[in-house]
Length: 407
Image 1 (tube, rainbow, N blue to C red):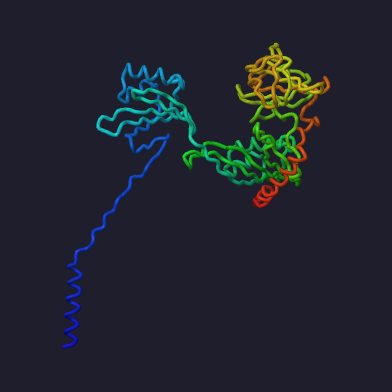
Image 2 (image 1 turned 30 degrees about the horizontal axis):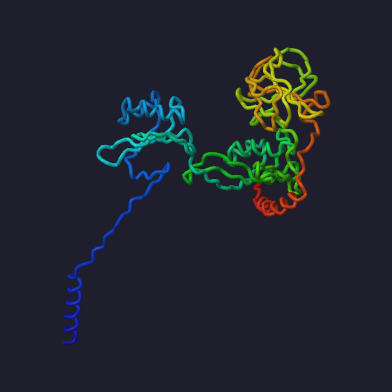
């Protein structure tokens, strides 16, 4: 009887559970908010496309339901901000339309590069504006060992080739990068530029570095010496400036194609003729920089030199830059170290694009790469103390980067 009683109770319990109505759960799926170019794209019908061959600013607008004379009025307004004739093949653009059945075009957005963009209003209130995306800087560490060259060591680590150029600029007067040895190694702390949180748009700069050359350590740590003028220089662990009063080369990203040599046989002339300059090979149009501050005393053209510029730096030193495609300065103009003075070309007696860099000391032409040139103005005592305090944790970070030597 007792057993039968429990079976009845169990049956009633499970039956009641089965018949009890289940509670309904409603799930609300929120639309993901997408913001770009300062607009919430969810509020529009969005067209994303790319400029193709045959496209023009006007034809793109016409394809998106705009017609003359409306297009004419938009073009007149837009060209005040950017040259509408120079939209380039392969560059992206976006058109925002009203989110209704009419799909009225409201805004045209053109991106000439990953950072900058142009907004053009397509409504009755016409306007155009250039803007830039917010750039975020992310810091990275890297290290490498020289097996044959710095560029190959960078490539092996899948690092930007621009890091090689910047590192050689930083150590220009400390290390001869044309004479590196197997086993030399480096460590760097650098930053890259990003937009939209994850899109890489280029190298920012190297913030600090360590380079071991022939067993000797060379530190380089950036430090802002003049906040008002935003001047940043590199110093070693003792506060010594790595910069000199002269840049090592008048062009960036170049190579020495011919050194100062009084017994060199010049191919152009087919005979031995003294070469009193240092040739830096670079593509046509590459910017030529004044290697030190000074006054332009010559800017002209001769049959042998082609377009050339001469800069007098002080009573001791003068420099000259030959075979320019174009001169960018005039006689009497004062230029600062690193200022643009012209571009690489092939004018005058030359067989290839390069700048012939000539250097005078006390009125005599000399080899600039063999001169013990004056250092930059030393850091003040007060600023040096501030630098040494600033430098310590950065040096510690560099030292903690593990060098992986693997031959």
